[in-house]
Image (tube, rainbow, N blue to C red; front, side, top):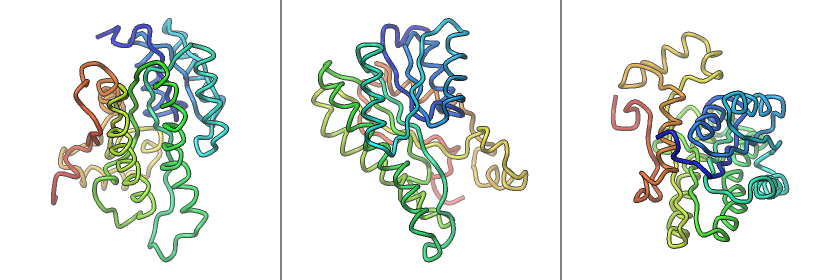
Amino acid sequence: MADRFQGQVALVTGGSSGIGRAAAVAFAAEGARVVVAARGEVESEETVQLIRDAGGEAIAVRTDVAVASDVESLVGRTVEAYGRLDCAFNNAGTSGGSGPIHEVEEDAWDQVLDINLKGVWLCMKYQIPQMLNQGGGTIVNTSSDAGLIGWSGNAVYTASKWGVIGLTKSAALQYIGDGIRINAVCPGFIRTPMTDSTDPRAEEQMVAATPAGRIGTVDEVVGAVLWLCSDEASFVVGHPLSMDGGTTSGMW
């Protein structure tokens, strides 16, 4: 298991913290050379340093996934540094736009959709040609449990994450014949630096809303991402993998 990605190159967006940082470190631990992409340059370099300290190889590329030129440059820098792109984890995302639909400002809609949905599209738009050129690859996009059900508290975020699943399924069908496997992960409430700073009452509500009776861990999500990118998941195509402690399984 320690060398599933030996000789491969993995690109992780949103790699400056949380799930993205943990995924970047995990890819490197299993032999991949890693490109860490995020808007936070200092934090991305911290991720790279964690990888190097453990004996891995990585670079950081400042990237706003909502900007086409940034994403095009990111893929170019990846190929320039390492010659190929085998695995892409399109994880960058944002929250926002909560509240009743009629009260949400247009700017909030644009920001959430630009990062969460347009960003995933742009990443695949520039990653896929490289994978076509080299004969294949794997892509995992981050959706959410909110991409599987309705969420009355935040319709804008929900719309963006449903969009990611539709985009993932459509792209998966388009490119599986070219040796490119595309899937999505759909985390529920996961313990990250963001949730650690949440009001304790909010955390209690998260736990109460989760049939498993706890918040998920970053490592649980990362394990699924690496599995989907590995040969062990070679027959998994266009699948939105739910990891939410049962939240989307039914009424609770």
